[in-house]
Image 1 (tube, helix red, strand yellow):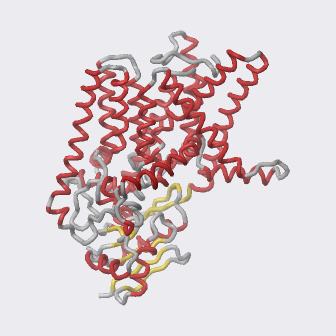
Image 2 (cartoon, helix red, strand yellow; image 1 turned 90 degrees about the horizontal axis):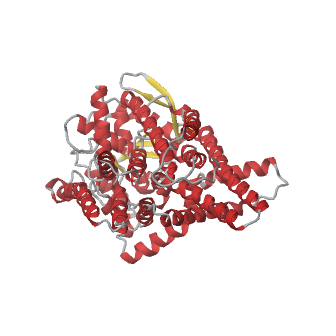
Amino acid sequence: MSLSTVTQPNGIFNSSKVGVTRDLAMLAVLAAVFLIASAPQRTGPIDLRWDAGAYYVLGTSIAEGHGYRLLNEPGHIQAIQYPPLLPAFLAAVQVLAGSHDPVEVGTVLRFLFLLLFAGYILFAYLVARRYVSPVAALAVGLICVLNPYTHFISEQATADLPFAFTVVAFVFFASAKRSRTNGVLTCALCVASYLLRTAGIALMAAWIGDALLKHQFRPALRRILICAVPVIAWNGYVAAVERGAEYRHPAYSYQRADYLFYNVSYLRNAMLKDPDHPEGGKVTAFGVLTDRILPNVWKLPVALGETVTSAQGFWDMQWWSIKTRLPRLPLPNLLINPILIVIGILVLFGSGVCFVRGHKVIVLYVLFSIMLICATPWASQMARYLISLRPFIALFFVMALLSLNRIVQQRARMHLNMLSFLAMCLSVAIVVGQASWGLRQMYGSYHSPAYWRTSAGRSVRYKLFFYEPSYKALDGALDWVRENAKPGDVLASSIPHWAYLRTGLPSVMIPFDRDNVSAQHDLDSVPVAFVVVQRGAPIDAKAYVGGAISTASAWRMVYSDGGEYVSIYHRID
């Protein structure tokens, strides 16, 4: 069976022994690539920095019977940013492990997330097999398994990978033949996707829209009712918390500020013109169009090209490497963007082919998701949000190549047919080769040794992505705080949940206030005992509180690492 063969929708494996053998061979290749590519991730605890720390803290709260609360915050406030399914899963793992220790439980979670990663790749192949041949489906699977960013996300205990898994599994069962089992699984996976991430609303809209486009109005009504239950339940909970006395009378002045994204709803945070610069105020409807949607749509072709291959940074490194080894080869850097744009245009063409052929739920999900992504203020997170779309974007790319090749074969002469087929194969080879090279660079340059010193004094060594010198210095500083702080001392940093897990002390986000007097007032309202200033972090603490702590007489620097990545300031009593 050649790359250009296309199967009929709803078919998976060919009923013949030859067909089954081919599928099993492709799955074996995919499994071998996955095992080799993910080998460096099999030891040590999972990454609990950034959002993962918040999820883990919420899981601990549930496991300990405290409810859905942020234990790191003064007052243990109710959480309203993340839907509760992943924290509930993390709580179950902690209960079954009989421990809340991040190292012990994190080691189990790393294994479980690798299983989710494998399931994500398996379903990506199975979904593709409904529409294309085994070899073409293998190409889709390889695009998914070799993407560097997916490996980075698979090492973090965030909802991104579980969400991507539920989405691709949903599409598999939703596109299968009707049966009670498939129907139940489809409903469960759709609800689970929303309870993992509110972006699951795009999947719900696609599921309902698919029925409406097919004039299946009774199924559409049933789907609306099914989807309404988790949406109303979660948003009702958020509204109840926001109306409550605890929310209206926070433990400190900025605890529920709209910019403090971990402590407020996505909607409140997204309503700011720029969440990193809250002094800019709320965004207007016209601002959403001009400052978010239009610029993000303009970036979309390149982003789609990066989704099929890897981030532009890897292209730049590879381009430089080729030019260094082959200096006479004319390879201007200006070619990178056009290549990514061409791939993105092929993806858009493939989505049209997919829609015309009647596979509407996939196209609708990708469309609604992109609309949602483009309306948010977090453009830098686009690569992260596109993970759940990667199997379908890869499928669109492959379907576009197959369709173009078929058009040439139907209208061109024999020698052009062969050239077209070779061009199609070369395109897939370039995409897969570039991604695999990027993955090698990812592990070689950005997978660094990390350590965790447990409360018992044991040092655990493992590897994490982007564990740069600044994070090594941060962990050393947090270990110092744990040994020198008094019980109940409050830390302020740009990574509060990680600080809480490392030290066991109450930890809050720094105030996003560039006015020194206001920032000092905010820190006093907690009150903060230690301010941790990390350089090279996603949130620049020095830009917000640097002026206040360096000029006010209330603070004294008590710790600084040799590389000057981290400084700690202590309140003078």
